[in-house]
Length: 206
Ligand SMILES: C[S@@+](CC[C@H](N)C(=O)[O-])C[C@H]1O[C@@H](n2cnc3c(N)ncnc32)[C@H](O)[C@@H]1O
Image 1: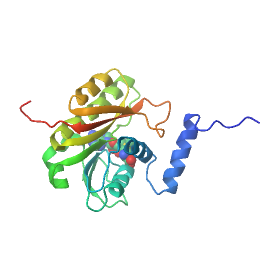
Image 2 (image 1 turned 180 degrees about the vertical axis):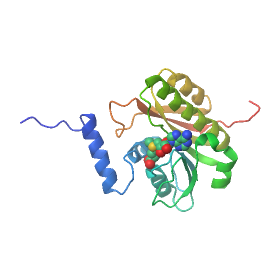
Image 3 (image 1 turned 120 degrees about the vertical axis):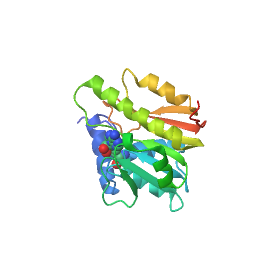
Image 4 (image 1 turned 90 degrees about the vertical axis):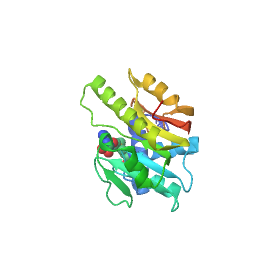
């Protein structure tokens, strides 16, 4: 009898993480993408202040809250409000959120800005890619204004024509930047993540 290949195939990987999320009480399997990046990049620490852009249905927010603990703080932004999760949420598009609002909500500048934002796809590959790059650029525009010097980012990106230029622009602001394709990302997906560490700071005059 043929043996099932361990970890082989998108469906198998999807099932494994979906089942694990359900068993651990997370609202989305995407929590394991962040968990892997956090483990490898040593991103989150107790007491940190974190902005979570595109936070619905809330699995990243819940994971981050556990990692930063009671002395830390998380503010989530999304078009929809996560249910059943205690948190500080701004329910609006990121294009309508100003940096000052985020700074006020977390009580100062942030140690980490996360973006797992993605729009519903239209079926037009190039248009979807451009829209998603637009979300990454907006996340970074906000991050430049709310991050503490030395802070970190993690953004979801979909590969495509404009991805490299966008990443090169982000990279200039950090001491180091790495790409991650966590195991929980379906192998057929164009999705990957960038993690930037050591924010160099930003001034409006630049
Ligand atoms: C993959 S889901 C995020 C999953 C979340 N990280 C979790 O683990 O529960 C992507 C989210 O991006 C949000 N999103 C898309 N466009 C947005 C925008 N313009 N402003 C805020 N959120 C947006 C969607 O509403 C959606 O909830």
